[in-house]
Length: 71
Image 1 (cartoon, rainbow, N blue to C red):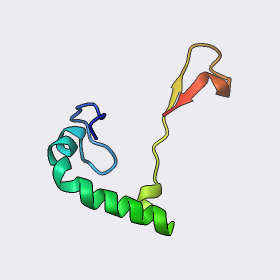
Image 2: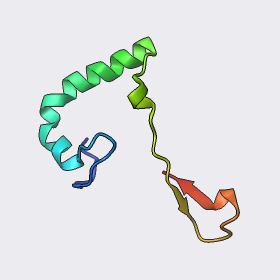
Image 3: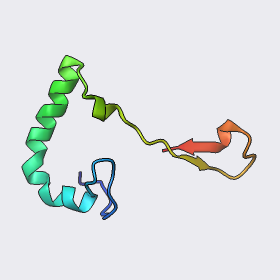
Image 4: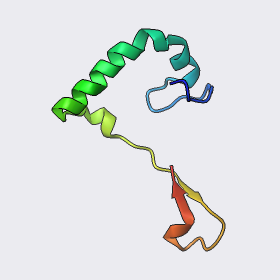
């Protein structure tokens, strides 16, 4: 969480990084327990399987797949 940039724009769960940084001391332990348990049991909530993929064009031929970076 320390490496996150301070932004007020919200992500998938409508939580911004400013809020996360303010509450990190309260959510760090429960969040790490939940993530570690998920990894140990190989059970992942379906909402955690959602990704937002945004292709970012790099200068060159727009028809070439290799000229895009994905975030």
